Length: 446
Image 1 (cartoon, rainbow, N blue to C red):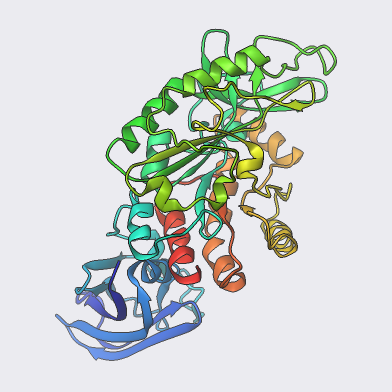
Image 2 (image 1 turned 90 degrees about the vertical axis):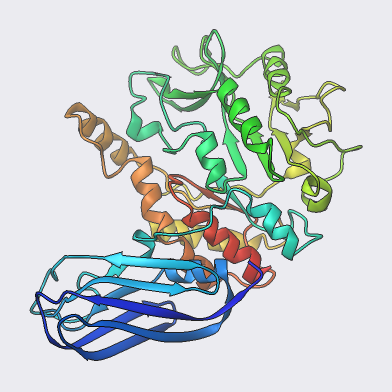
């Protein structure tokens, strides 16, 4: 991470069985195109160098992931592999294809481009990215930087569900808590429920008529185990936000025969003592704001785990027991993110909503809720598809994948020095691309 890149080499291997002659290759990156026009014959391998403004390795990875490569000569799709590498820092991207253009009668970049982000072959694992970051930018606080957050982090599987709690309308992730940690997630949205025998993560919506519909996911014991295993040999921060708690063994008659009650005070305190089994809980001496605490104090010598409580009893904030208060367990005001989702299934409307809220709350600790909300029509389509054992393209995960692909361009277009989100909150975190975007923010915009 200490080295800055100013060049990369492009290596094109030619399909010698199919074409000889001129070849026009375009590398399309944000704000710049690199074109390469060469004659070649059988057995050729073209290596050429292109340059760009100095940037860090991580920034260059973000840059590369958004790039496309395509040929202007649609009857000469001749390359079997395009690689871009910088040997000084040991990174490489490759695109391999034997695909023909979809339409040989038209020309342009939209005809079968190959996306480097889809074929990324080498990347540094981001599992200790915070430790690495502090080596280069010490004395930062959470107010200064951006974290990657997982929406409904515990819903990567279903351990119990209601009638309509089918996968396409409850699953928000495909990776376990351990998997998300290794992909760079540091902020976890956990919604605890009591199953009657143990605590689990839940995802429920209270609907008129049927009442609460949803599912239970990962058990809390597994959440704790995954966090302890991850933090044992690392110096990383992990933030757990507890909210939307439910007791799925009770009914709330005021809301309908099938609506669940929130956890009682005693149940919630029992849950917190279970979380006390997490190692490396971070202690403060008072009710200071965690977001303004120096990160070197938190993770300079070891990992740190903080648990943020959003829980009311009789319309009053839950009072933490003395042996938990500020000892790894903190009130919402101590880590109070501006967190308001767009409530739409339209990517453009979501983007406009979040940008407007970000501009209006520039002084807040801002959570960019980069998620889509299923419409009633989406839910109906998912239920219909489930009836024929088909995964829907209107599922939460499908919506998440769609907008995750738009994240980098949004950040590059709208963010800058002193104008960044503090948390990027996503569904469907399935690779390290989101963490690379977060690192781009932290290295280039902070």
